[in-house]
Length: 120
Image 1 (tube, rainbow, N blue to C red):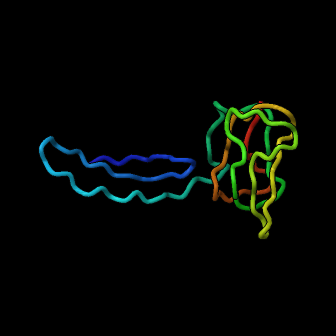
Image 2 (cartoon, helix red, strand yellow):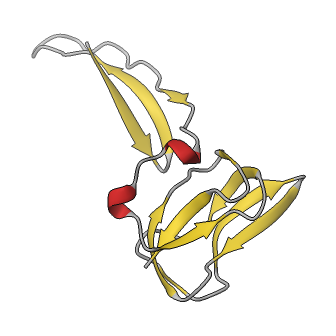
C-alpha cells in the first residue's frame, strides 16, 4: 500500500492506494478523509507569487475564493471573501492586474494583514 496526499479545489486529502494484481477481484476503495489545510502563513508559493500583495483587513476565516490564478481583475474587484463576526467581507484588488497566486484555501483561519493573494 502507498500513501498519497492529494489536493482538490484547495481541499487536502490523505489517500491510501493498494497495489493490485491482474485477475484478482478489486477490494472496495477506502474513503479519503480531508486533512486540515495549512494556515495561510505556512504556505510556500514564493515561486508563483506576484509583486502586489492582496492582504486581509481583518482577522477571520476564508469564506470564498472570488478570483482564479491568471484572471485579470480591476481595482476594487473581489479576490477573496472572508467571514468575520458573521459578516462576509470582500477583500478587493488594490489595482488593475492579473492574479498571480492564491495563498489561502476556503476555511483557513487568517490574521489581519495576512497575504491572501498576489497580483502582477
